[in-house]
Image 1 (cartoon, rainbow, N blue to C red):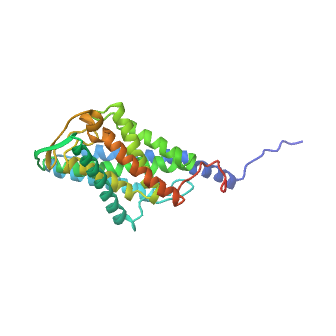
Image 2: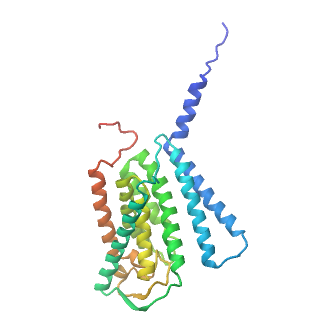
Image 3: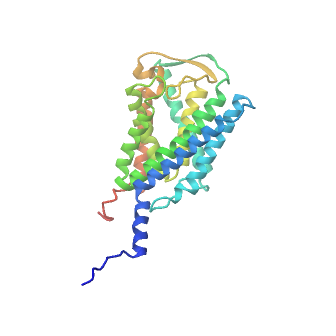
Length: 298
């Protein structure tokens, strides 16, 4: 009797490869690879260009180029990855959510600074300058807020949540966000734990609530610019010159030490409570997602 080869139909083969391509882990790795390629490519391209402009103009060109390319890749490539196609940068709510986010970030950091001042951990010692204004607005504000949120919430949170559910995504991305800041200037283990809790919960909850990145980017930007430019507080460990000259003093639990107020129990409590409140709103609106192995209705 002749041997019969069991040949898989071409359509079935394509469906298997499509299932692999659409699997959340694969989609996440591809998205991270695309973003890494963009960031490294822009860095090499701009570093090889002749210095024909002032440092401020060069920084503006670098920031706008990097953010623009990350926006393009996120909206027109990453949005098409995975089984559940999703645009994290919809244009309709962009200005409104971005503005609300900046206002929330400003309000939370202003509250942190106000409490620190009342407790004697922060005080203004004189007028500052605009020397670091461009660096704070572009690097700590626009670039850090946009690119970090695309990576941590737009890619990592999105597909970890699709695989493992919302609680796991919130825990894992918060931990990774804290670890990512461990290499910052003046960082400590406590500062990274504080960043993981206060920023991880707050920003993750903002993403869950809106299912887009605009509110998250706004909060991140407003928080950084307010502490650095308005109150001259170190931004995630990096000393800056702001509109005023300021001084942090007293116990590090209140002042955050050299890392800044983000490593204080004040910021930890204020931001974490705000994050838990937003998380509660997201859950109330049905935004809590279960792991992929849990069947709907269970």
